[in-house]
Amino acid sequence: MSGERTGYGRTMIMAASEDLLPWFNDTIATAGVIAFYLLVWALVFAGTGLFIGAFIPFITGDTLLFASGLLAATIVGVDVIVLAIGTGIAAFMGDQLGFVMGRNLGRPYLDARTSPRMAKIVAGVEVMYTRYGWWSVVVARFVPYGRVFIPWIAGIGRMDYYRFLTSNATGAILWGVGLTLAGYGAHFIPGVKSAAYVIAGVVISLSLIAGYRAWRANRQVGSN
Image (cartoon, rainbow, N blue to C red; front, top):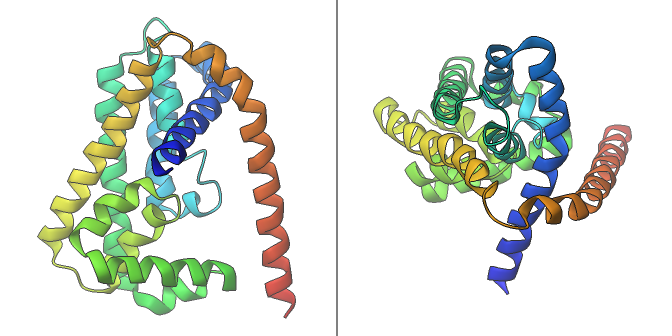
């Protein structure tokens, strides 16, 4: 059963990634390959370092990395090695910024900038960090809200700097480099592209429904 859920999750990522490809193609046609690299790296960095991932986790997370890898396999001029290494560095630097800010600004700063609903997510991330320590930083890379708040929680919790450095680097390689290369490799799997288009509509619909429900939940909490 867990294997089926994992397979379905991977299919959803591929589907959403395929849907982003036209946007990436337009970016390259308009501004060029260098601008495309910078756009992907900026989104990855901002997703954790600047809290952007708390509001648009899919555009700054797994879907972005997978889609950029797919594009590297289809567009002449995009070097997947340059893309993957740059993505890993951007992911690493984003978490480092979050850690330093959490360490210096503290919990009151974080609490003042999160809604009541987001505060519950932060509390769950904090439990994850307390239980798993070093590994939580690595695993959180693959959890939409986890990768946003874990660096802050680690900084607030005064995690040893060098321990965080190693866990952050490990997570950046597995997530940033790994998912980009996975997207690149998926392009060469027969049937991936056609299947992705079929599922993309369902994924987008579910994302819109989830976003609307989150918006409604935030409004209800804020009015209480």
